[in-house]
Amino acid sequence: MGMPTHLSNAEIEEFGREMDAIRNEVMDSRGAADRAYILSIIRWQRSLALGGRIVMFLSLLLLPAYAGWPQFLAVLALGAAMLGIAKIMENMEIGHNVMHAQWDWMRDPQIQSNTWEWDNVCPSDQWKHSHNVVHHTWTNVFGKDPDIGYGVLRVTPQQRWKPKYLIQPITNFFLNIWFQWGVAVHDVEPDKLLSGEKSVASVKHLLRGIAKKAARQLLKDYVLWPALGAALTVPASMALQLDISQIALLAFLWIAGGNAIANLMRNVWSNVIIFCGHFPSGVQHFTKAEVEGETRARWYVRQLLGSCNIGGGKLFHILSGNLSHQIEHHLFPDMPSNRYPEVSPRVRALAARYRLPYNTGSLTRQFGTTTWTIWRLAFPGGQSHALNA
Image (cartoon, rainbow, N blue to C red; front, side):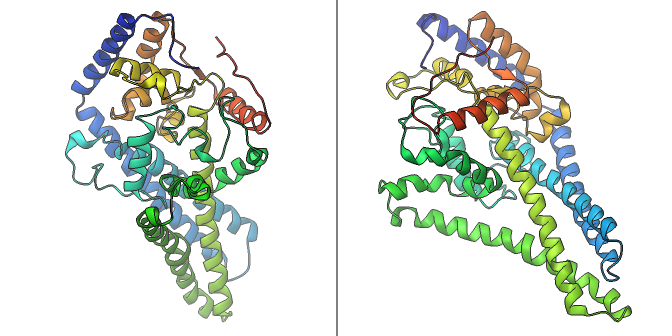
């Protein structure tokens, strides 16, 4: 825990200057290739979303005759999976990174951090405050970063154990499947509301924003799209002289179910990637005293020590929003995400030269140690584990 003691102040400042050099070189080289990348990702995402919904609607052609149930379910599942991947891409590689101002330099009015509203029940303005302003500024600082366990999990032995943590494996399960709702209330800090540190009156404006955004999302996924699906079955039901109301209701429920599957896919995947970037074995945490008077160079060191990478191929990196390069993202949050794979080897080499750990591993390793941490620290005690070489 804490800042490395083997480096002098001068060495830490030199480390910071070298990090700045990497950042400046990449930021100065942004251009047509980067623009083409994000525009291509957006086209693919929107095509997948539209295609997924069309496939789900096409599956309804099998519904009025009550025939071909296996085929119907297979087509519905395919459409839901396409929509789920689209939602993952929109939240991870597009929405998250657009709202980090990674693409503001293009001056495209449709892709700006101050106007982008993502496909999520969390209002973008609240997310940008809790994530960009608070978490990225105070990464892993006790009493400053609410992302240390999100107020409900004990993820480091330095957190004082409380009886509430006994159920954290169950809490973690529900946080996983309802992750967008956890993100939505994160800036509200429900744990502080329950403890009395915050009053309901002080967060009423936040709750109103969440209610408005959530209502819009629920209306879209669980009313309007299902209603359109139900309407599409009416002509076929009439032609076959079937009970229109029964067929329409079934179509409504199946489209709503497909949308629920897509949202579940997005929630689970987002939770896994984010947790594997913050809670695996070897992650370090800091006290307020340790960051008092912190320079930019020391901020760089803290971001390096408090983040983890996940190994994988190009498609994996895209689906993770390049948060598989969580270290590089925390070092350079406003750098276009497609450049993280390029700078990762340079950051790793720089860390090695200054004898600083660079926490990276397979998804299995990172998820395994994260899960073990959550289960073990549900109980009193626990110890910090050294990062595997």
